[in-house]
Length: 527
Ligand code: BG6
Image (cartoon, rainbow, N blue to C red; front, side, top):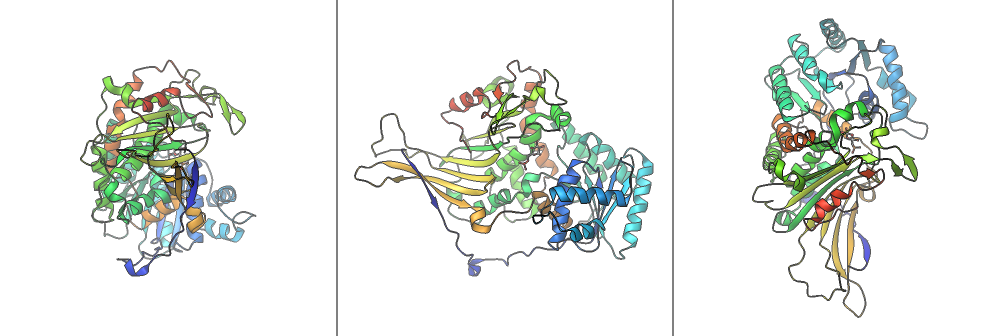
């Protein structure tokens, strides 16, 4: 490989004649009251802006209300002002921010109830407030409960919601009004605690009422992975061990731990990114084609892929997983502190902020094909991608310069930013001699369709209100993902990382991660 050129493909107009089904139209949410437990960061940064955008797009009905329940003292007016301020910072709008009239209209749907979640009196008050809101809109309306609270409070809140009858079990998914609950990640902190939390959830609700959220599944490119794989016939025949050498899934972040060290110190990168987001990407990449696009058909196949992950034994751990923690360094030309110097981090913290893990999927399709997953904070820039590296041609008949080999073909799916797909292949460099070069055939979402504007939470909140659970994780999926990472967490918990910090902020992770992948004849891509 001597040179690199870029090729852009144009996007053809869709051909209506070949569509088997009519294009599904965006549906409006059903009338409902959304009760949000917790009024912190998630509510201000994500939930309120997403609901505001959905309302702006006409996807929420007039009979929609939010009732937030949190510890701060305040009333509806106070809460509406708070949310208005948050929208001016976090919601999209023109140059002057979101339209003031639209903010006022949205705020009129908001309500607030101060209360402690471990106090039964809060649930009695909650029941009354829900009753008052419902009374203003005759006719049945759904009730959606959203747990945006620290995970240690989930089980207690779920049990109290059920015991008090505020959120009753609804055995039949067709029953109206519906009752649903959204549970944020992390869902447990180990397999055992996830199993326990699932049991608690099951005592309270039927599985169809439960929406375990993983915001990666709401990302446009992640959903596109299903379309890319199963709406095209040219990729599936090569999507297997006969053609794929290995797969790399990277979620790189340039931010550090920010203000979340209290949570992060307990979690670390494997619980924060691998158990959920990265293993979700792996399962979508590796799964067999589902028979239908229904929630259970898709999730059945994902869970089969997760269950096929080879268990990692302690004696083989160093062949499968490496960890790192950032020290001081430079990001975008500006000095940044090391993890141990961040607020609320213990001075000798052993929490990993980087990990690289090799997962093997022991089934017919993927036998012997490594899936290298890595994620870290304070890497050079933000980039999430899935890259499939194909096998090299078995015999190269073209003369190569000494020391050079033919580059393998790569298909890279950029999840974010600059969402798109790039296929890299070899061509002949024009000229008298035969020289090869790698070129990129590039599909960019922004060029083809304009900038992606909506947030993953918009997709997921609307789906939940519509009873569409495909993009939410089922109990067995969550447990299968914990089964895959639990041995790594246990092993690391028993061995203090004496070498931390082992990468400087602004580097692509620790040197051991490069050696780890090089042992298998591969190297990390720079996304
Ligand atoms: C969250 C993690 O789930 O995902 C964060 O808790 C991480 O630590 C974030 O920064 C990354 O999400 P995104 O959408 O920015 O890739």
